[in-house]
Image 1 (cartoon, rainbow, N blue to C red):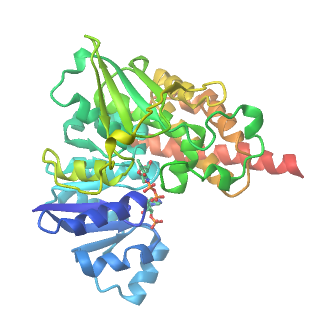
Image 2 (image 1 turned 60 degrees about the horizontal axis):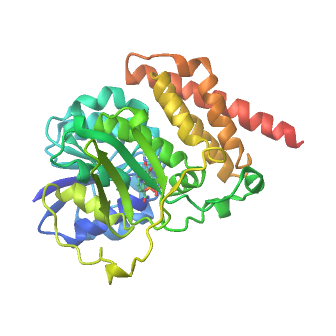
Length: 386
Ligand SMILES: NC(=O)c1ccc[n+]([C@@H]2O[C@H](COP(=O)([O-])OP(=O)(O)OC[C@H]3O[C@@H](n4cnc5c(N)ncnc54)[C@H](OP(=O)(O)O)[C@@H]3O)[C@@H](O)[C@H]2O)c1
């Protein structure tokens, strides 16, 4: 019986993870879970999965839940981090959204025991350089990285010529810059294949999600950015590929269902039976298409490679700029194309060219940088509309 903690349990990945824990009661025991604000999302699971504790990381929501009494021991963010470091846990699934999720990964990896099932790609984008020594304990949940992990199983990194990440292309595949000037948040949120949280859905529309994944793949598999490519594959059946130096191409195929990579990360190295992840019949896939990314309209991959070339704080600040810009776009405060302007601008700032010696120092720089991004883009954007 594996003792599992689910962080970000109220989100898209977190909810699917809880459904899997409920489906395999003889395999997994839910030790604890975390949410930020959305208590309602976990209420149906509490009596079913009976966790030992519930962490609520937003102080106001924790206060409200404490007053109403959930019937389970409630803990705050600091207590959560302490438990991640010290409790006997087999697997921590980190499905928190945003760079704030780095700290949960950091505390988990300070505990010598648990495996980190990592959905929070921002963990490695923010602080990959401080976590690489623990690589062997990280099992990716992102479908592309799970695919690469499976393709690389039993292989040597030195035999890899290229990692090829696939991308759906998002809702704006085939569009040009002119077409994107007026797009509304609802259009950008209409992903053709995946149902996900709002931030990753907008990132899929800008292809910034793929940019973050390129950085994630670099740290996870120790492959330089020039050996990582992205191919658009609208069917989302081939989740990624590895090209080896003898010309062999290995790919991982499955239905676009996040429960598969989540279950794989929870059960690895075993594969548990899962009857829903089938294409019936698989032969009906008559066309698997691949096309290059239009990097003129969608320049995010270029920014990711540039951020890795600069190193230091650059990837974290590129991500911070994106988090601020996506939030502002969703609130109707900036137009869609300002997200790209904001990302490009972020790498030109002096802070992006600093090399902090610890994640704590980076966090101070990153928090100040978020304020600078808001000042630059939100205030000028409002002023422009007056
Ligand atoms: N969704 C997917 O299919 C998918 C696929 C691959 C990778 N990922 C990655 O997985 C992560 C989660 O994605 P998602 O789509 O599941 O996101 P989501 O649906 O937005 O859920 C995010 C979770 O993070 C929590 N959270 C938000 N702000 C927080 C904070 N400041 N501190 C602590 N927790 C906070 C949320 O809590 P409340 O809801 O309670 O506020 C929620 O539980 C992201 O890094 C994403 O890139 C997602």
